[in-house]
Length: 278
Figure 1 (tube, rainbow, N blue to C red):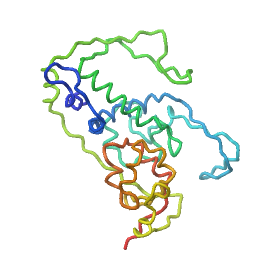
Figure 2: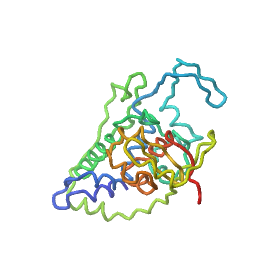
Figure 3: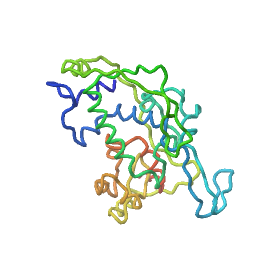
Figure 4: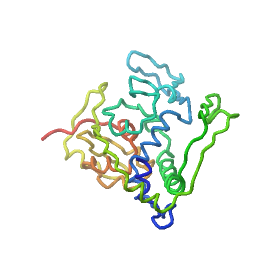
């Protein structure tokens, strides 16, 4: 399925890849799902740590000021009560899974302190995959892939065991054959943002939202929820394009192909309330 998608950007005359631009990478939805599933199963960091700058309560737990809060992407993204068949590689889950919990995917951290390089990492890997899989047919010939080295600061493979692949340079007809593959469409279920259960939601009219329409004071509406994303403006990978729907309904733009799935979690950090039905 991924090879068929990437073949759209292959060179039909001499194989390999043609020049691709940013808009092309936004169309590689299944390739992105493959990358995200790999990150879910084998995240590069096994621990994320934050210091509590002030004491707070979370559910039934008390977190004193100065304590270190730790989460493990490697453990939390393998929970079977969150991801069905969590130990199986299944990129299609990112199209069919509905209403995953907040922060179910933390391959790049989460919230306002999520890794700023996440969007660039997806862009880079899509470009590499486009060239690699339009140039070569690859087949693993190693009987077992190396285990992850969880003793390292950044997780890589355990050293000492070779990983070998068999490869063949593709011909133009191979690119065409990939394009002609008949693959059933994935039946997707679009997730809708829901207000947090632990907050009593205020309501705002659209007229109130419209007043907040500048780089220094920016509110948007997504799925009838109101968000104050002023703090996120300097971090936005797309720069000031974030102002395209300033003070208005940004649902269509927010759920566009340029955004990776984890933005569904990130935006909830800026939740303000509900849009008041008039």
